[in-house]
Image (cartoon, rainbow, N blue to C red; front, top):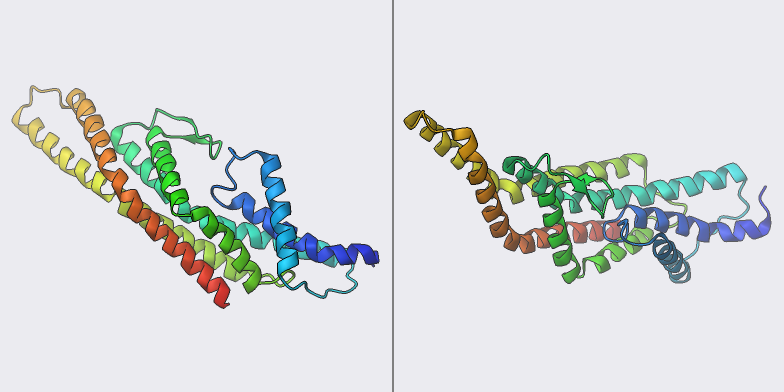
Length: 254
């Protein structure tokens, strides 16, 4: 059996486990640009706030294996919900990847300071601009509301089932692909038209080097379409906010 004083701290530990895991997976808060001390301090501060605000579960004496299992379930819950929101948030990056392939920027890779992974310049531009739109719409407050709603729906030590978490993540993945295709559709359509025009020119002017002529045309059209797509980020941001709001409403009503 556990020591009595450890049993008293277990509910707070469960809240801290879910909060830390979800903040690590969420966009904005989980960015590598945010120092580790800041993320750890924010997780601790929010955990104390939730411990004072939410009713604490009466666990009683708990054995060590059961306590470790409870903490693991809270970590899994936080990671699952945070990953679902992060997947939908990354639809702009996926749209930038699709557009970058059409521009021929696949070889121009740099390190993304947000994710720490190799990324493409156009995808980084889209992601950076969209982050500004998201913050202007108080998206970071909405993320904290999602964290709070998870404790309302599933109090500490009452985590959702693995099937429910998996269904949420799968729904987020399909939503991310749908949003990415909607955003990249104008640029993809423009490049289809350009390819048709270049194909006609190749038949009409066989002496013309279409391959060399297509490079500046593709880059120029791609940059022009990228500038035209930026105003669409406001509409995309509204769709993302509605999806997260729907998730918060579902959790609050659970």
